[in-house]
Image (cartoon, rainbow, N blue to C red; front, side, top):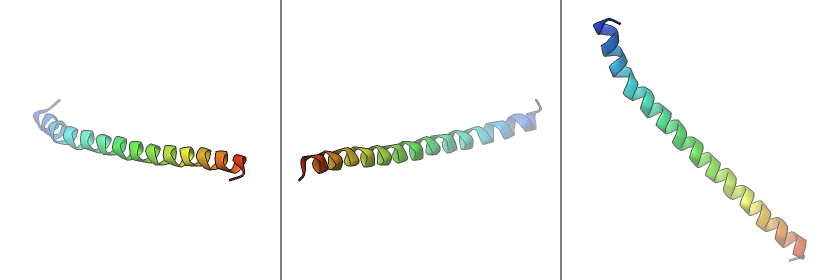
Length: 52
């Protein structure tokens, strides 16, 4: 690996790490939203079953 390539790698690694972290955070938020919706459906179905 040349010095130039090593410099490029050092420059790109933090950018890629940041992008991966942001992607994980977006996925976690999306999962939380879906989980909350699924939990709400369960509650509403239970209420429907009770005739309330």
